[in-house]
Image (cartoon, rainbow, N blue to C red; front, side, top):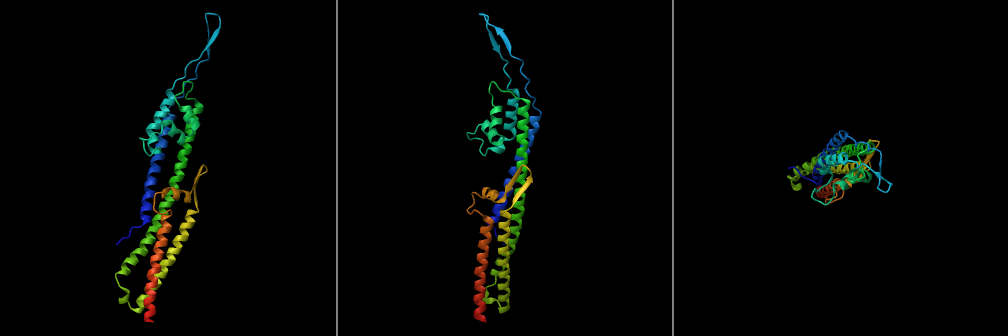
Length: 263
């Protein structure tokens, strides 16, 4: 019988998050491709002076077009937005989402103000900021991969212990010979040592940081805090292993009692 633990749920959570991050990275890359195809707005012609009836002059400015900025906003809405906002029915505006993903200044520059334009500098800024976000998602994905690998290893080691406990439970202690009890006691001691090692390994993993590029790093403890925020325990791996060690300790005491009575 396979015993399902919180570690299994944690692994499923990591895999779901990893898929979401990979989807977002692909969306950001699609956005980059579309922005690269957007032409910058033409440079407005010089200010023309017109003469008034009284002989004075008025400056007449050409109104820049919103074409390029509109194309970029549309591209963002059709690629990145659904991967940035958890609930598309909420009140967050498109420009607010752009600000959270790229920057406040870029969102302001992309706004449909009458005196704005999609300039070469603005295009470079949009592309640079988006590529930074692509790099960041790559680092997060790498950290999630490491977490998934670690969880899978822990799950397998936990399964080895729980499977043994389930099998051992089929034979009552009263039916075991003295040597069988001694062997069971030693096996439980080995399982407890394994639990102790798993705790140490997990603590070491939490203290590490994934650095995939010069532009980003993910502290594993910070990632874990985010991933398991809605779990009943803050650290599902540690909680599961500590609980398993306690079960092994109880079993070991019961075996020891039988050994003492038969000595």
